[in-house]
Length: 184
View 1 (cartoon, rainbow, N blue to C red):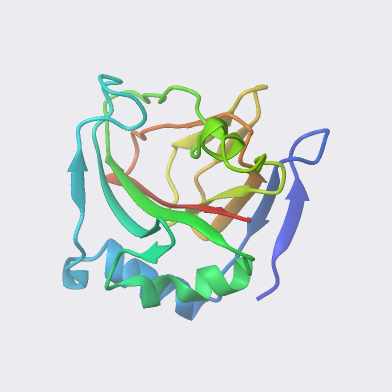
View 2 (cartoon, helix red, strand yellow):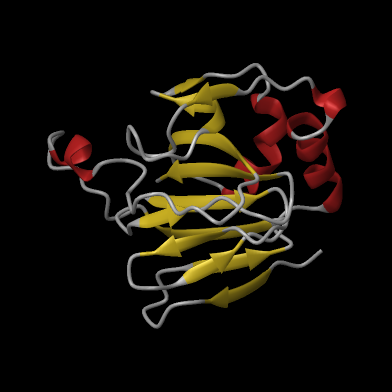
């Protein structure tokens, strides 16, 4: 299946890739992460971005600190291979439950620039962030500047890691599930 690309912003910083994975690879990931048979380990976090932001979620870290952190990493390898990173910084999945109204997290960058700027003058210039949507719902990713990307199953949105963004909850399905990727 071909990847449909479209640029969302005037400066082409935000790229949307629809139908990103082959249906078989998408099904394997969904069967693992969001089906009763998947027996996937989710870990509760009382906040989404900052302490007290009022948006609890469940998380699973696949990769962090130069280490595979999950015995289920092999399930997301088709996603990683298709992105083709030079180096992975972090891969984390988030699932938020349905809320009565859409809640938006605070604007943020996943990897704080000051972490890299303190290391041999490394910056976020070449680092990318991607949000891969596992289900379609009325939640979205909102960007500093006003751009909004809808949660559509099998969609990947890619943008510079220095671009502030926010995730939301949803009101029309039981949950909103994404895989968040940071890489060079």
